[in-house]
Image (cartoon, rainbow, N blue to C red; front, side, top):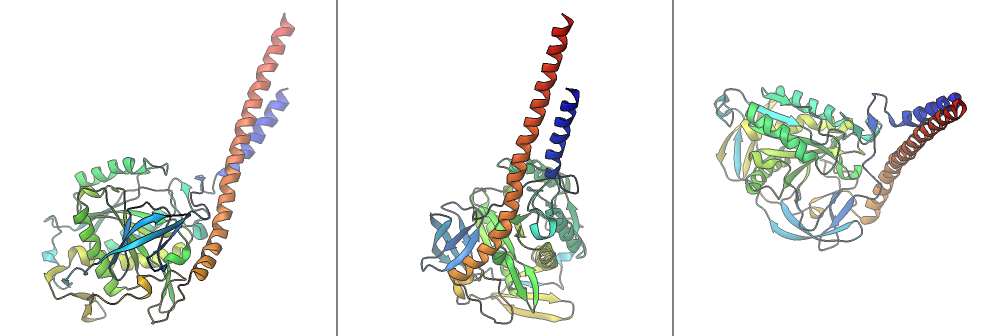
Length: 401
């Protein structure tokens, strides 16, 4: 009987082992095939993609058209045009750096970074879309810190874990954000994430090189929404002027995302779980440049132009005045190029790309299913072992009588 118990115990351990990744973290999948939503405008054109949406959510396309989602049906969202926004009319001069003072009047410029969803990862590079613990998103945050530091910014990267990845994760990360605000008094705080949509929505090429786009997320439940929204638009306009391929959109969700703490707190979606992490890391220096300029370069009211600093050439003036929309402001099929190349934005091509992404997602989903099955086998094995042990003890007592 003891041999049977030992065998059952070994089987239980073997069943549990596949759930553990190489670095010892439990690997679970949170991206299931078909969960992402394709959002259409009133003309039936595809203009956005999101992993989860609610009626009332909004977003701004790269040409500053603001939409609101008014209907959801079978993983399709339908949005109406609310208004055409004017990009912030600000002029930046990187040669004048606000007297080398931060926005809070401190001698040192300071930014804080943290991750509400620490487990988020990149399937092609990390092997899983989610790793229970410090996932691939930590690599992105670390690179972001390094690139901001090169700009002369004091960066505090807080890698406190806020797992599990569930509805109360933001409650846990709020403790971290409040502590950072109190102890560090930063000029801005950024919550670093990765998205859960298709690769085609984020992947973009520029001069023949691949990059990942970045999405800015703002919480509509934030009582100081207008201030955060204004700062997001500033970042968005500046990024679009210097790196037109960098930002995908500004998404306006119904959460608060801990952004009520100060007007310069934002959430960045750094690519999606189906994109190679290398493309995300290539975009990080560009984002750092935009953030540095928006926060610390001098600002003056201008005529709709932004002065961009480039160490390799004199300052250039880039016109960001409103322009006619191109393909309704978004190309989601294999990204866009900076060489004027056009992409077919048809629903058929989008479906093909989504299906290809879904095939890879399905493989991850199978891993999650196996994890559940093996967990049940583990519990069953331990239960049978306990029952066998109890029966063995009972037989011993009966023999002793």
